[in-house]
Image 1 (tube, protein in one colour):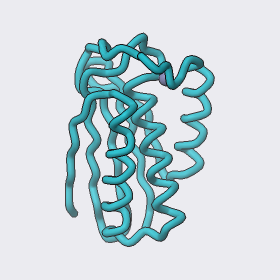
Image 2 (cartoon, rainbow, N blue to C red):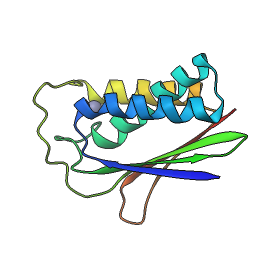
Image 3 (cartoon, rainbow, N blue to C red):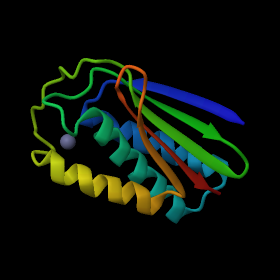
Image 4 (cartoon, helix red, strand yellow):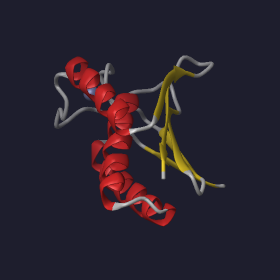
Length: 132
Ligand SMILES: [Zn+2]
């Protein structure tokens, strides 16, 4: 199994990098084009859930961990700090509660397993798995 980790600031402009990275790793893992789209969308929703939804600013730092196995890819998105101080300039999600609920539905419909938890500091953790 291969493990990859990214630590990034919660700014929405970095979601493009996340999509490219997920796309590249998922293609290497053997997913088809449609499944790669599913993974990109699910992971982006998870990133927004952890960094944005329910907070007045974006998370200063969060982590994405990918575990790649011949049979599945597991993605864990976790908030890495207690500070959500990155200002929401463009307000990509003014209606966080509604978008958050929709995002959870999107993640659950695109992945084979999803777990929403909190770590020992009470920070959001979303762990999800898609079978190859
Ligand atoms: Zn939001």
